[in-house]
Length: 369
Length: 226
Figure 1: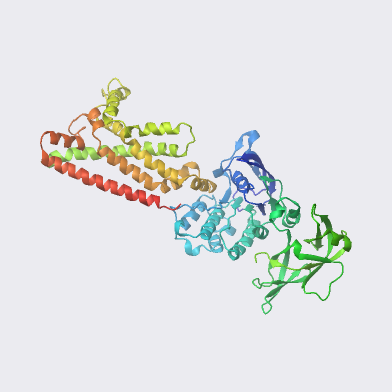
Figure 2 (figure 1 turned 135 degrees about the vertical axis):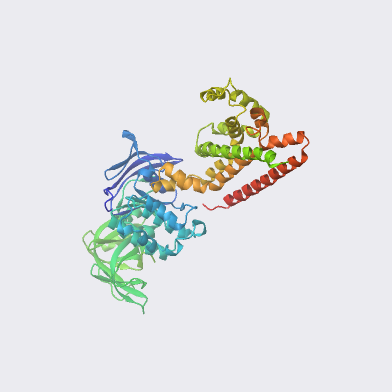
């Protein structure tokens, strides 16, 4: 943040409470400049945790953002929502019906305490990125669901928060629109040093926007881990049954091959071909690979239909309890990939940590495709 | 029938209704806000107290007010501070009586409007660093505006049409407490049908406009998107 006096710091959450049937237990840290996704199925308490961080719902415990203590029950501290430097986008956008779209945005800007503002979060920039230019004079009543969500997100940003709290803020948007907004949001968070908490049950969305994932289930969220690591762990947990295990890889687009409908990418010096040609050469892309779409070989395979073969080394082999499967984590430079194969196959191949292995990727997709 | 006989009661009535409406909004809005948002267990008892003048015969209300405003009541004590003997049979007395009598007509539409606004816009305002006071004026009041207008219009109109309470506490002092409805009564008593017709007809037209205005406002409010 520029000259706001609000030094960015980590958001330190230690809250618990009961909401109806659900026991909420939230203990995690979200770092400045990072987007932390609170990820879990509906009814798992995501929204409650977010509302408690905002000060809209009261749980007990301790909550601090950097040097600012927002709640500390032992010292009787509870800073009301309107004194917390937050921005909040509700899942069901709550726009002010008596104001135009611009009026809604200016309402936030006027109270942000930074009339000049952080140039990375300027009115013009936000309006342009969220494609609101042609809607500024309209009233909320006439807006579509997706438009309302974009206004709501823009308004939260223009409050120039130190902690940006987003509750499924783009659930009403099409994938393509989302894919354009999420990387920008992530980059903007990095540039401004904001803490972004992003609540979602959509794995694709989470992977696109988040640096870290804090999985939540049954009201309990007890830590955030880097995306790759969190995804890697997902299949073992209870939440996994609902989501597909997979990995995220980061690669650079080398060339587009429109005649084939493919893009050629570079991943740690190795070459991949992935369907889709939207991304310009030189840009970074995130790829998603489902664990069950990865096969392993201990020798370079020849004469097969699979085009994407990556050479790496085994990091670990982990049995999935009560299933015939094992998950094998394979590393390439600083990235990792998880393959789900049968335990039988793992044993027969003699996979050991450190051993060389070839990962055959049956399907790779751009993360937003 | 002349301007001198017609005008004083009309002017007094408009003054009384105007002053009363200002006080009704100042007093009724916070009561409506409180009733719309409190979780106080006995809030409906408070609401019933406010609504009591709806069902109470005006003479009963007027009787108690007469005692309260008279020389031996609290109104008398207040009056003595200003060198008067009593608040009864005075313009301030009429204002106090009218406020109590018309309060439910102002509070009810405003309360409904605040309830319709709900908690969420105020939460949104809080996340945008609007203090409760700020959010009240910049979010709750504008969103509840049709209800506030309806409350003001109904309070004004109800005060204009008041008869029984005023007769009890104000009497019939020309220029001081002789309002329109009482003037009409007098003209009828004196068989001055022409004057009674003019005044009654005006009041009828006025009332029709008020009711039509209020209904259209409420319709507009019902169709409002939040």
